[in-house]
Image 1 (cartoon, one colour):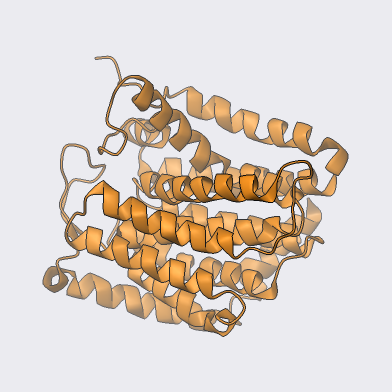
Image 2 (image 1 turned 180 degrees about the vertical axis):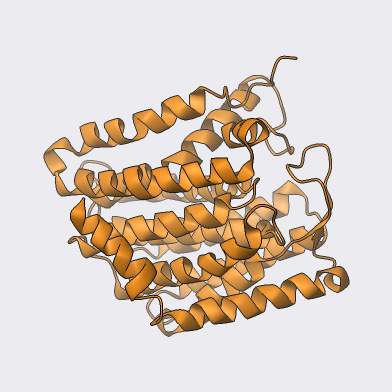
Amino acid sequence: MDDYLFFLVNVYILNFTYYFSYFFVATVFLYILIKTAPYTGLIDIPNNRSSHYKPTPSGGGIALAGIILLANLKAFKTCPEFFVGGFLISAVGLIDDIKSLPVLPRLLIQFLAAALMIVFLPAYNPIKGIPIIAIKIVLVFAGVWFINLYNFMDGIDGLAGGYANAAAVGFLFCIYNGFHVEEWNIDVYKTIIYITIPFLIFNWFPSKIFMGDVGSTFLGFAFFALGARGLIYGNFLMYGFIIIMSFFWIDATLTLGRRFIHGQKVFTAHKEHAFQKAAAKYGHWKVSTFIILVTLFWLNPMANQAMRNPNYVVLLTIGSILPVLMIIESFKPGLPDLK
């Protein structure tokens, strides 16, 4: 744990000045987006399904997606599918933020982006005994699901941006402890960390800007893409992903699964996620802070321990996410509150 605490100090304090340019550019970009929102149509108007109560500038994800892609453009030759897929996902998200799109075209672009990432993965088989084609098919569907669940979980101030920051720190810690990935993966994680800090300043309760679909779907795609690339170096990285992202995938999966079982429309806006119910009871900033801290100080170190102990990786993974599952289930996600 001491190594992890030193790592946090290194990331958030010692290295901050080195990556200050990311912070500065993101801050200026977000400020411009806030001021120009009335003229661009990027305003989120609240409705009875919203967790906010006044019109708020949206589209902050333009800064997130734009800076991540441009700052890491040197990796285009290594993995062009990441940049093509990321551009497609963010472009469709932006159009949807300005003028709501039907579900089908959004899903088609998401499948295309996910398929691009998976089809061009090296042929290394990370899970022995299962044909690589079967693994790739599953990964494409998993990618589309993760893109959407990250979007679903962007529902209260500070959550999606704060979770991206904490998760990127967790993946970096695991990588620095001996789990090999491509160098450009590390650069993307660092970019996410230092541009989500200024985003959180504007997005913390009460929010001055939302990331919108352009940001949430892009972040979902980015984490999926990096996870898929990491998978080719050994399937223990898969367990790290399962642990670090557990708050999001467990809440979204339980909620949407129950809504589907009960015949409710899966893609219709609602307020039945555990985090939404918790925010209604305790407030946005308390729920976002709790989830971010649990990720930073429980899920991240546990992911590292699980990956460093391959003989106990399954047991440690279950032990890591079980408390998260119990917390989420206590709010009965996917079930309407009884009046």
